[in-house]
Length: 179
Image (cartoon, rainbow, N blue to C red):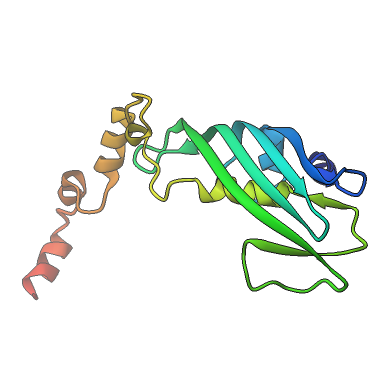
């Protein structure tokens, strides 16, 4: 229930707004990501500006998300700050019934709705911006991978020299002769 309250601030009541452009600003911190249980991103500090262009039959939302997210390096497992900058657009159309739209850029809302919660859209845009391969060194801020951790991981890797030394059991030698 507490998590739902954290996302409640991302609801925009559009019924009282005048036709035209309206701007909303949101701060995104760790509590935002805590609301999503299995999130790739657990920490971040982002500023989001949403420009809502209200028209008679639809809303056009333009998102601008800038800031830092904290990712885990795939190579050395260390946390590092990764800057992101996202520019996206979402169209919201009104209908008598809640219809599904084939177009991913269009959301259908019932005409009786009075607000739209954009938390899931913001979350989706952030997650899509996370690189497929996350490495400290490729981040561009000069941070290097933790060489001690890389050495430790390499020593534990399958086929490492230390593992071969521990396999000097004579029973294995007898089995290798069967090849």
